[in-house]
Amino acid sequence: MSEDKTPSGPDLTKGVSLADFKDGKLLGHVGSEDVLLVQAGGEIFAIEPACSHYHGPLAEGLVVGDTIRCPWHHACFSLRSGEATRPPALNALAVWEITQDQDRIRVQRKREAPKPSARSVPTPERFVIVGGGAAGFAAAETLRREGFAGAITMLSNDGAMPVDRPNLSKDYLAGNAPEDWLPLRGEDYYQSAGIDLRLSTNVAAIDPKTRSVTLGNGDSLRFDRLLLATGAEPVKLQIPGAEQPHVHTLRSVADSRAIIKAAGSAKRALVIGASFIGLEVAASLRTRKLDVHVVAPEERPMQKVLGSEMGDFIRTLHEENGVNFHLEDTVERLDGTRATLKSGAVIEADLVVVGIGVRPRIALAEQAGLAADRGVSVTEYLETSIAGIFAAGDIARWPDPHSRHTIRVEHWVVAERQGQTAARNMLGRRERFDAVPFFWSQHYDVPINYVGHAESFDAVAIDGSISGKDCLLKYSKGGHVLAVASIYRDLDNLKAEFEMERSRG
Image 1 (cartoon, helix red, strand yellow):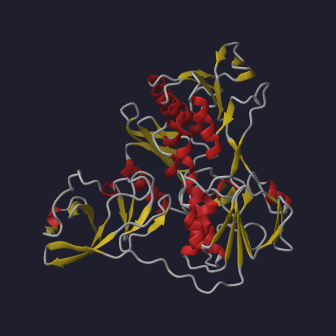
Image 2 (cartoon, one colour; image 1 turned 120 degrees about the vertical axis):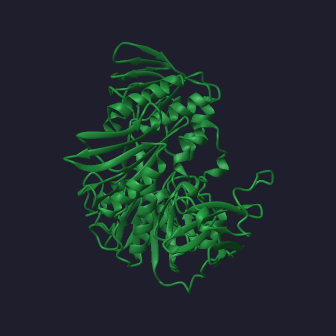
Image 3 (cartoon, one colour; image 1 turned 90 degrees about the vertical axis):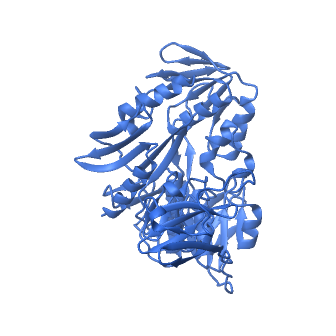
């Protein structure tokens, strides 16, 4: 906390009563530090009040058992230990000791942060993780957190350490976040945790019989357990002129850096595709004062996912911020900076960003003989058709107990949560992956939170006002609610997630 910030609420060292609590919570301070008191069941807990992910206000979150969930991006923390128990948060929060004398509750002192559990003597087991994204990183970190002492090798074809990928199209691209915010952990973490992170490393093949992977340079690496977390890659634009240097896709840190560099001298940007990524890029480039045009074949932006009413709102929101839409149209060719559309219209743009979707990287899995169906098929334990080989993240197609279908989801938080579950199952835990999918999208000052998964829906129930930026939308099919989206209804969104968890299977 900065020294010039006024501490919140009452001085908790002097004591408060339960009558001072509102909805089971009370925000106060100890010295210069803010502290959140939480009543859960018959107990009172004292915890740091800001989520360790993006500092969401836990006072506005949801208490479930002896945990508290962040209203912004659904991270979860243990009220007893402060441990981050669910992504996207990674770091634990501080907790304080309290005393309770009849109705008077006082916060005494901060507990010492638990020291990382020392790893036992290394075992012969060798775990290999192919992929340096959300799922791969979460798996490696979880293995060490769970006390695994064997060898962990993480193979990434990216040149950058695992990063907070959502930021690449949001605040970092907009110029509102420095690059040193991007790494999920610093380089020293991998060294101290004994994780052999190999960047810019391609995997050429996986041999399930010899339990080995062959690297691009011909080297071989044996494994006892393997996690495939190869992620997805942007779909390439297949039109004349698509290979020109001013045409970009966005997936990696290098991609985001290249777009930022190009934006420094560009005047007009053309975004091809009205996907979440495409429109987040459009918003970020408008923040950088570029003239932005979006071309997409849909009648409305993101109508398939969010419905017509929300699609109309998103279009209006972007138009109010200066974005020009060319919908129900496509780009047929790029001649230098000249883009010719199917309609015959021409757009001059010195920066082009293509956001027309991604496809899962499943070639390695298919070559290894793993069962695949528009993704790598896994069990509820995230194990593939070959024992000891697991898959997580954008490539995994798993049996979802809520929708009662096998699904594949390209969401950051889902990938992190799958990485954690896969890691525990690599250790033999037999933990089902049954988390409700969640993602968020940011458009200027408007956040959209979405829980569940609806590949299609036949009804949308709207509570509140979409245009007023205060709404909760429920997407259902055959009377069964499959997904919920919201704008500034964070607590309601958390409650919807919790209800879906309770109704699983």
